[in-house]
Length: 305
Image (cartoon, rainbow, N blue to C red; front, side, top):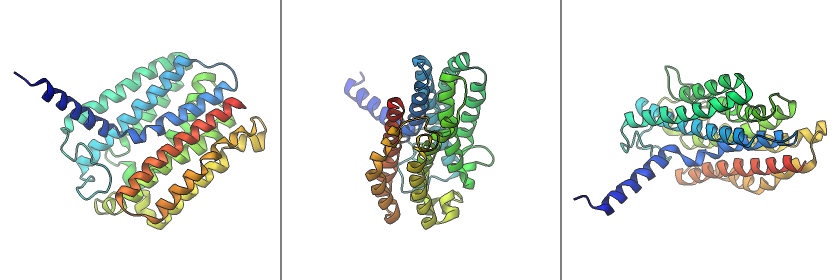
């Protein structure tokens, strides 16, 4: 007879492994742009809460699918070696069979498609193009014959899809039009999402170089990549208030995200001075928290405008 306690322990361990595979520390990058895009739409009228929920869930499923695809593809290419400084990857670490990771990737993207079907019904076929491009970008990050993440283009695609596309798409779902304010407010969101990847690639610079993975950090070198991180943080704070400073269409509440400056300065110091994995892992998680807090305050500022 099977021991119930042993079964419970096994289930608990399996759940922890799948949570590790989903990389929960990256999920704020999926949530944050939806909050900002929807809050901007709220300033122009009421919002569709079901569409908001569908956009939020769709973004989360795309992020998880991208993480699983990355886990599978990096293991297949031999990029996740034993000497990497980041958390254990479930495929390369032998915690989950590759086929199961691949199936989970398909399931996650499939759930994103289900959310997209509702959004297409609400906002039209333009959402089909946005959703398809987002999923394709997630797969081709480290998958396909020439993964763009291996060519130093990861930060560019993160800026586009977790900034511009996600913010303007979430806004479009509610309003069915685009405005210059939506495009401008997508910039700080995209920069902070890209900064998460910069920290990740600074941490993995040496192992990525040995694995032939030419990330932007590998191409630029450690010091230039650190400078890029600092520049992304700075531009995020400078661009957020532009709709107030230039257009006057929104209020000074757009300066609310500046309350997170102490956290940004702390993270900058860590990235500028440390090379050890555990500390940079903390900086990676901290940058995700920074983006989330920044965007929550930006969304609050929009709703108070």
